Image 1 (cartoon, helix red, strand yellow):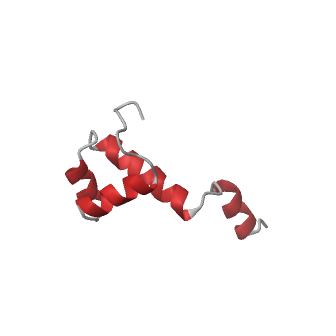
Image 2: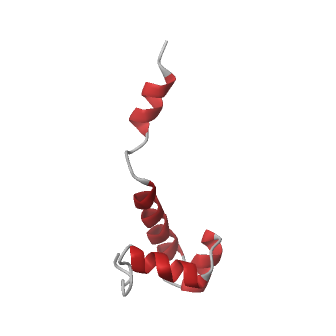
Length: 66
């Protein structure tokens, strides 16, 4: 019998909450072609909150190649 905790931890990358948040923001921005309003709505946050997080993770001024 496999130990559930061992199996589960092996399949999930060891990312911090901040790393996961940054990764999700980048993904959603790509999905919405860097349109802040659409990305913020998809994430369930305000445009201002998204701008603050982009500043926090140094995502400002990214072009479509990120």
